[in-house]
Amino acid sequence: MSSYQRILIKMSGEALSGKQGHGIDPVTVRQFVSEIKQVASAGKEIALVIGGGNFYRGIQGTQNGIRRVDGDYIGMLATIMNALALKNFFSEAGMETLIMSALKTEKITEPLYPPKAEKALREGKIVIFAGGTGNPFFTTDTAGVLRAIEINADLMLKATRVGGVYSDDPEKNPNAVKYNELTFDEALQKGLKIMDATAFALAKTNGLKIIVFNFNLKNNLSKILIDNQITGTIIKP
View 1 (cartoon, helix red, strand yellow):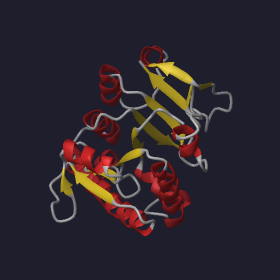
View 2 (tube, helix red, strand yellow; view 1 turned 90 degrees about the horizontal axis):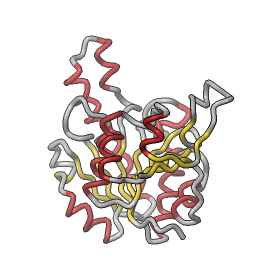
View 3 (cartoon, helix red, strand yellow; view 1 turned 60 degrees about the horizontal axis):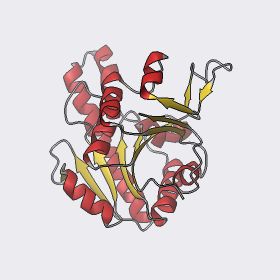
C-alpha cells in the first residue's frame, strides 16, 4: 500500500461537468465520489480543493465587461456552489464532509481553520476547501498547494484529462512525450506548464510532492493511493 496517508486532491470545476461541459453531471460526480470512498475506506485522509470553471471563470469575464476582481470573486462563489453539490453526493454515499471556505459564508460553510480541518481528517471526514485563496488574482492551483501545506498533506494530486505531464499538449500533438517523474527544477528548465507559477514556486519551496493524473480513468485513484502505481507523473524535490 502507498505510504501517502493524507492527500489533497485539486480538481477543476470542469471535471464535475462530464461530457456536458457545464454545470454538474451526476454520473461523473457519483463515479468520483465512489473512488474517493474506496481510498477513504482504506484509511486515507482526503481533502479536496475544487475549482468553479463549470459555472464561471473569472478571467474570461473580463472579456465581457466584468472587472477582473469581481470576476474572480464570482469564480470563488462558483467553487462554493460545487462544494455544496459535492457534499450532497458524499452524503448520499454515506460519507461525512466538512466544507471550509476562504470567503465568509457562515450559513453554509465553516470558516477556514487548518487545525480544525486536520481534526476532521483524522475523524475520517472528507474536507472540501472552497472559495479559492479568498483573494482575487490567484488560481485554485495556488489554493490547492496552499491548503495542502497548511494541513501537512503528504501529497497533492492534480486531476487532469490526460495521463500526466507531457512535453506538449497530448490532445493536440500525438507525438508529445510523457514524463513519469520530474524534479521541480527539471520541470522549470523544460518550461513545462504544470500549474501557474505562484503555485509551482510555493510547492517547490515547501517540498510538496505532486502527482498529475488522469481523473477520467476508472479506479485510477486507488491504483495510485492503494496499489502504489504511479499512473501519472510525479513531481518532487
